[in-house]
Image 1 (spheres, rainbow, N blue to C red):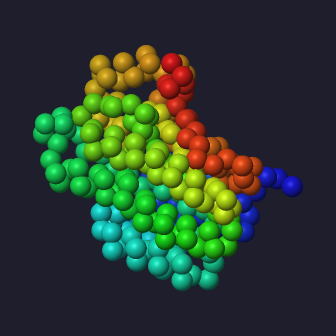
Image 2 (image 1 turned 90 degrees about the vertical axis):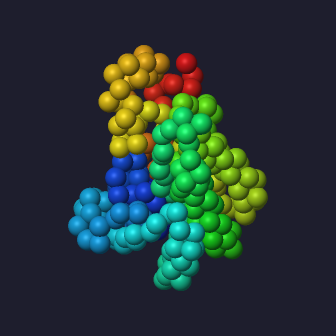
Length: 253
């Protein structure tokens, strides 16, 4: 048997319209999972994620959800729980970033980043995790960040939220590991996505970042695929509360 085979499983991937979420949804579908894609701006039909999932011959459904709206997130969880199939895999990947020096980082910036990157993740995990615990199996994966371990510059809200995700990963793992539910996190390094465009456009920052990465390049969203499939699969059944870095060696430098 292939321990990485996800055939027959249903995976929910948030932030799946582009970037890391799109790559993870694609990889899970390639491994056999049917996909529920969620994004704040997901097209009703014809999205890239839908094309990729259906291209693998998997079942696809999509939901547009504002992750700053806690009621909307709870409503999504309720709709998923009421579906014909239980959710086997939850990938909490949706995120946003607001850049401003701490002294100019407004309450609105802080509240939006914490709502999307931490609070919405907890609400979905709590609601869908409850059913996983009742069934005795399930996989929850958070997308953390290098700034879960480092302070960063001009992103206090993002750093606080991503640091909180590591704590949440460990807290849920402690409670749910005995109940057959695995909760872990992937820690992407500097990945070439819309969120990092400003850094790549700044020549001095771009050079400094590349000089610090042992692999010598920015990561690609597809670089996260293997870790996601691993943590979603039975190959990771004894992995609980882990934070797996996919960072080109940044944290080991």
